[in-house]
Image 1: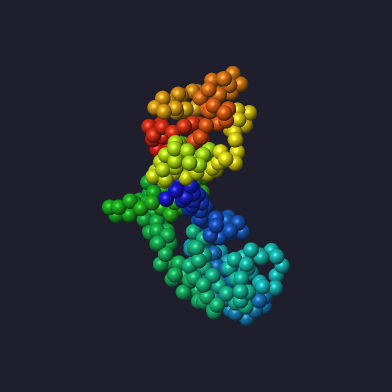
Image 2: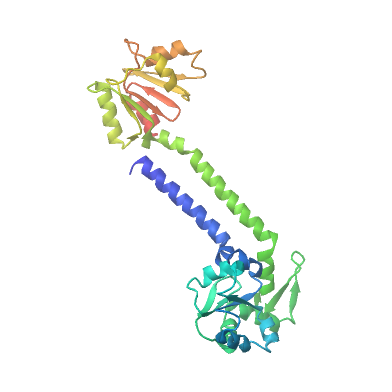
Length: 328
């Protein structure tokens, strides 16, 4: 696999991770949308959709919960009625939960924002209460009420942790308080910031990937030239991609042209036979004569092969230099 495809794959996985973590940190808001956020982790919601407020099924459903104020309050239930003929006030709820605009529909949303029940027919209050009472969070709530005789106060949060038998049981209210507290917000933003730093680090180190031998930025080649043939063989053998290749037969590069190529170059390795000259570049203007001696041939043109990888220019072929810089 080429460097470029490896890089793309890693970047894709990283971005997927970022968005996944962002989704997990925000799943409760995404689950029910801004319209119902204020009820999140505080209330269970019964959404009733009908044609209008005079709909017979709607009126019957309302009567199911009449005179049950204490039972409703005990389960933290609230009711929201949405009419299909109403204005855009509840447009979000209709689009999200009743996009088919059914004449009658009832939904039960848990405290986590998830849909627990969906029906297009009348539902008895016994069925809804029974379903809620079977939920783990509701069972914790009921157990908390049952075990209130053994409270344990904590100074940090000021909430009660209720002890049940030999095992500790954290009260649901404590869980709710933590979720709404600044602790969770702080942790959430810390994770997001850390993820951003990981992305920045990854992107800032892509040039290092070039220097590690899977991709080179620019390659100046001369057909039929012995050292260029050796360079081609080396690149193929080590599966190194070339982003841009320039043929010497089509473009002669003199020093005036080479100055543009040298922009951003921090060091030059020049090979003549077994001799390798290493030159660190501070300013091209001041070191122009030194640079000309090691990169230009007798005709005054740039020697081939020449390779740019990261901030490094390699002129001539030397297998040891190639292994050190291109393969690492």
